[in-house]
Length: 135
Image (cartoon, rainbow, N blue to C red):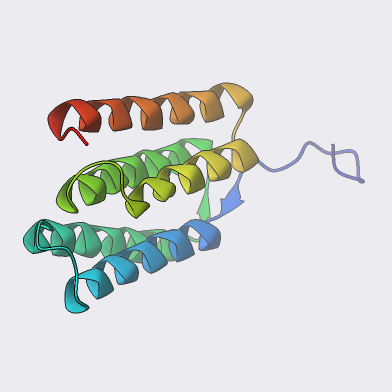
């Protein structure tokens, strides 16, 4: 309950998620410009970057997100993080840290059940990566 006694809003500012997608997209683009591991699939990395930047633009226009919109954004982030890890040679790599941000954001903004579902989806995505592109 808020100090006025009303229930807290279930709407969240999209701005933090916009920044996460914007920074992730920009860093991915930067990663193909600077010297990098030759195993990196530059085309896939650029594709992931473009989708992340477009997602940031869409979220910025929305302004506010309900729990459902927030979950869709986090699921999109999970898919993009998985694609980024795959594109940069598979696990383990630094892109795996993106899963941590997804789980932290879910734990902050969503119900425990939804946050656990997002954590499980990140774990499942990583497990699939390990099978598809073994370390």
